[in-house]
Image (cartoon, one colour):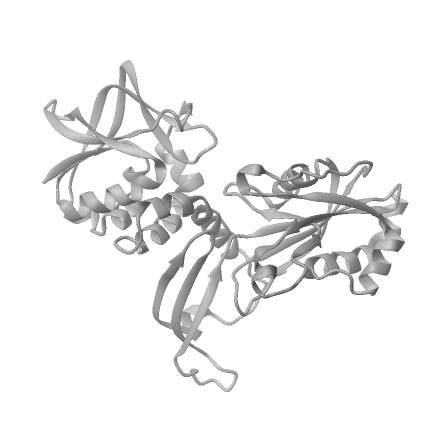
Amino acid sequence: MSNLFFYGTLRHVSLLELVMGRSADDLSAMQAVLPDHAVYAVQDQPFPMIVTEKGSKASGVLVQGLGDVERSRLAFYEGGFEYELRPETIVTEDGKEHQALVFFPDTDIWKKGAPWDLETWIRDWGALSVFAADEVMAHFGRVDASDIVRSFPAMRTRAWARLAARQRGTGDERSVADDVIVHDRKHAYVNYFGMDEIELQHRQYDGALSPVLHRSGLMQGSAVIVLPYDPVRDTVLLVEQFRAPVFLIDDPEPWMWEPVAGMIDPGETPQQAATREAMEEAQISLYQLEYAGGAYSSSGSSTEYVYLYVGLGDLTSTVVSGGLASEGEDIRSRILPFDKFMNMVDAHVFKDLPLLTLAYWLARNRDRLRAK
C-alpha cells in the first residue's frame, strides 16, 4: 500500500475519481502541505509543476493506502505528462509528518510560469481535462503508456472540440435525453485520431425507436479553414501538401491544393487558430477575417467541425517550405488571380471540398470585399 500527495490537477475530485477508478468517498484523503516546495503553472500548458522553493509550502491532498491497481492507473495517466514519483515528507493539518510519493516533472521538458491556482484551473480547464482523462483511462491496460504520451495532445484537442460541440444548438426541439438510448460506447482505438464505437437507438420520424444500431465515428478536434484573399490585387493564395489519406485510397495525385487549414488548439478561438495557421503555413498576416460558415465536414463518419473563413491580407509573396517541421509539414504556396482561380474551379482542377466551398462564397461576396 502507498501514500501519495497530490498538489495539482488531481485535487479536482472529478478528475481524481476518473483516473483512480474509485469514488472519492472510498479514499482516505486529508489536506496537507509539502514544505519548501511551490506549485507553478507550466509555460504554455494547462497543468502545473512542483519545484523546490525554500520557505514555501505546496498545498495539496494526501491520499493514503493506495493499492497496486491505483498506483498503476496513476502512473499510466501521469506518464502522459512526463512526470516521475519521488518520496517526500508531507505535513498534515494536525502537524503530523507522513511519508508519501509525489509526482515531479521532467524539468528538461517543462518550464515554470506563474503561481498556479486550483480554482482558476477548474474554471478554465477542469471540464476539458476530465474529457481528455476519460479517453486516456479508457485505454488503461490496453495500450502502452508511451502511446498515450504521443496521443495526449490530440486527446486534449478532441476534448476542446467536445466542449465547443455542446454549445452548438440551433433550436431543434428534440432532446437526446428523451430520444436517444445508448446501450454501449467505447473508445476503440487511439493514435493521432481516435475511433469510438457505439450501440444505440434513436427516435424515428414515426415516433418509434429504431433497432439497436452499431456505429463508429472518427473522433477529431475542430478545425479552421481560411482562404487568403487580397481584395486590392484580386488574388487568392493556396497551399499544397502531401495528404496521406488521399494516397491511401490510391489517388495518383495525393499532393493537394487547399486553403490554409489546421486544428484549433485547446484554449484557442477559431479566429486565433486561423491567424496562427496563416502565418505557420504561408507566412502571411491577415488583417481581417470574414466568416463563411461552420459545418461538420463528414457527419456520417467523423466528428470534425470546420470553421470557414476568407482572410483578407496583402498577398505579395509565396513560400516553398511552409508549415511546422515538428508536425511533419512540407508546404508550398501559390498566388492566383481570382479569374484564373475560378476557371480552375470550373475545370474541376481542385479536389478539396472546403476549397470549393470557399471559392463559391468568395465569388458571391467578392464585390463587397473589394468595395471596402
